[in-house]
Figure 1 (cartoon, one colour):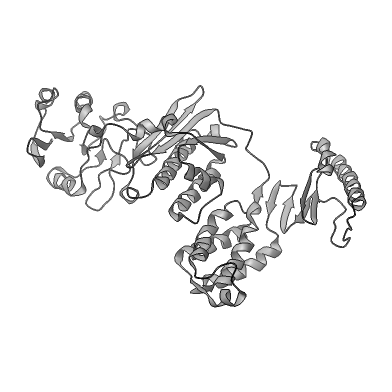
Figure 2 (cartoon, rainbow, N blue to C red; figure 1 turned 180 degrees about the horizontal axis):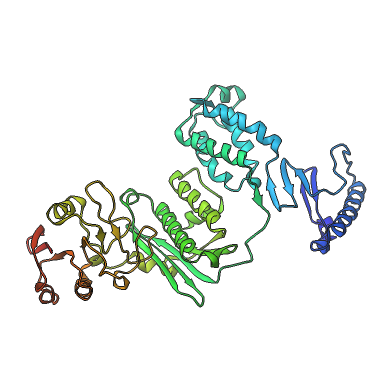
Length: 449
């Protein structure tokens, strides 16, 4: 602390110390920075000697250098990056190759390799995300870190595809050895109000940019996510929100920090710690969020807020009358009679209809959707479309019919057989009718062409 008070940046770890150019000379010429480092070296050496320390001269580097190895990490002042020394790469890659070809790994071996890989965290940015399967395997093993060496050596762990995937990623990261930047995004915030949220069936995200448009993404979860924990759904909502930012406002977020508000403390803790071995599905979503940050060249910081203050919450709890959908079996009945179809006018990635081969139709979404062909049916040029299908939400059937009429578009519609105000509007254009289902005695859904 005393040395730092003199204006000399200093890192210390037990008996290893790394000093840098004095703060007053950070923007000076190379020669002035070199002389600053020499003065700092003399001052630090004198202070350490007077404090009773003895310097191991053979291990010391007393002449300032721009690239130096400290605690096994290469510190490159020229590129402003941390990197893994090549000697460690050449040592660890053969060890990983050996593990990749093994069906079983001893507890002690896996424990050692995890420790070595974690020590590279500051030089391998995604590193911690790719240790969680390894940690989970160690936790589930019948041995413990406090056990004797004999027990650890005789306890074997199945080398699962998930473990091999993480080891293979570490091999790739070490061989590419791109390092991690020194630079920080912490003080360059995007001037926007960003929130994400999820409920049992839906996700949503809002980006409200100052002096710019309000961006909204929302939709239903796909079937494989419906039964997952809320933390996983919250992670998926955050991922979709960041994806919207990368596609819609790439220049505004590049090189800056995105402060996103979430109402799930578990999600915040996992992203702050760079992963979790307790919820590996959430960890996998966290990996994707990390790579989105690399793709968009931004830094993500999460802020916890109560659910009542989350602006995205309203989009996950909309009227149930907007949630009617059609299963694939019923849709194929329509396809057989009036298909084929190219377009699903109102859908999302989760409920878009698919052709008999399972290929999704082209569709428009209500909010931003990276897979859709456009947002908001009512703002699209529909007159150029053909082979069109639509199952509109019940409250806006009249608006949809009017839109189709104005664009002179032929369309197969799924609507309820009720006496609504739009019945007279649509009756003049009906070419054919098909009764699709009778879920209740008083309700009949029909399909018209």
